[in-house]
Length: 284
Image (tube, rainbow, N blue to C red):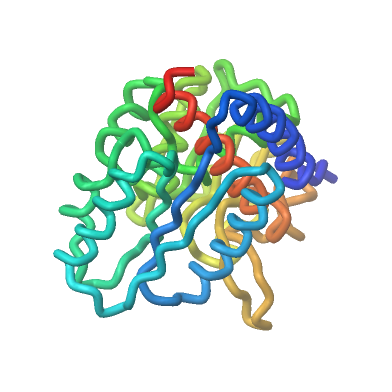
């Protein structure tokens, strides 16, 4: 049976480090601040917002929520976003996505300040992730995946990592972060032939496809490390991941649960990114 690698110890370790950094920055008369920009009141956005606010409070980071009406026009939204861009007291900006259909993310993503874009909305930060430029901000969830493996001592050098999912939110950026750690990476998706067979070649398997319990024991090589990024609801309306945990734990050497796995690390990564942005913006 594999080791269950939970997110809380990772989140706690990151938080302790961030608290020390925030205290040091505040001693210079600067107070790190996150602005959350939310359109409407989607329940999943509100849940993440509550978690993010709680984490910022724990770290001593200031926070502000800019809650905008769901029917806001694109011009008005851009006007509000530019206000946050120009606010010298704000160091990190988190824009909740996906946005309502009438707002064009392909235009808005060029408006957000790359220096404050702590969750990789701007194409500038997407490019920096691809280039391995550490002045950028990878998305929080892929970074959480990497932080978990680092915390639990997973050596990625020369290992074969298979990522299920090719989104810009998780699949593509986590693949770039794995490459940066010298893993050999294969990206799989809905049109991959013999998906279970491809996954069975993985030393490290990252499931980020958004299909409840898609990955069962036929996808997992004996001794593989399995990281489940999915957040779904099962037939009994219980939260579950993309991985069938009960089936896969017998074959995996390490496996993250859902809940209490990757998702529990994301807000601490966000806090870490706000501090990083604050340091860059203030040249400290």
